[in-house]
Length: 108
Image 1 (cartoon, rainbow, N blue to C red):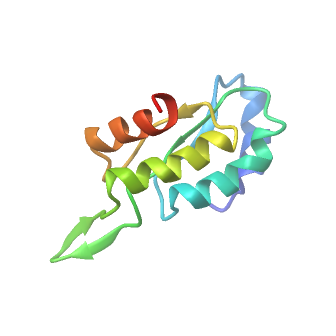
Image 2: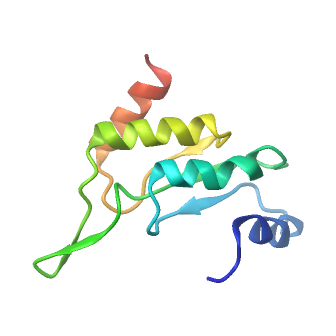
């Protein structure tokens, strides 16, 4: 929407928001980890991240996301280690993606 992550955070923080984050869009979980890490070092509230299961592409007129649950879990592990506390998924994620993420990050 034309605003950077940290700029948006600082504009919204005075509105007494309870968490701040990023979801959806054309960004991989690994790239989202890199984007969130600087903010995570100074954030005064929990951060959340709910990326897509890969980058969207069109297949026979339909949007398709081809990231496997295992690849999603690896990327979300990077997001977790960047300092983001609330993790989830957006477009293209299925229960299998969330299960793989939980298993990789919390149950190993």
